[in-house]
Amino acid sequence: TPAPAPAPSSPASHPSSESAGDVVRWAAFSCVLVPVVLVVYGTSVGGAAAAALGLAAVTAACRVLLRQSERNAARARAAESAPPRGRRARTAAGAHRGGRHGAGSAPGG
Image (cartoon, rainbow, N blue to C red; front, side):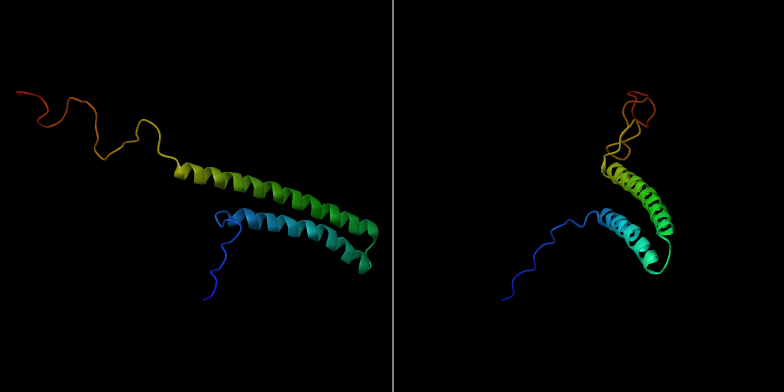
């Protein structure tokens, strides 16, 4: 009989955070690779360095935006899973407390 497949080592509950990390890693790799390719194909070292700095700035800005997006998504998930709070939250439909209006609630009336 074949052995059962092993369970994945990382939880699949946050695939977006893993893909965001992958994006940042590939962008950092590009910050190194692109200037090397530019120098190999005849661009000046100064031009390649300027390209590397530009790519690094764009990568940093994207990383900040991705982190902010992940935090907002985590807050939204937490808000969805939290029980409702406030005055208008009711435990059961039509559960009213007190009050003078209601058919047949007044004795002898």
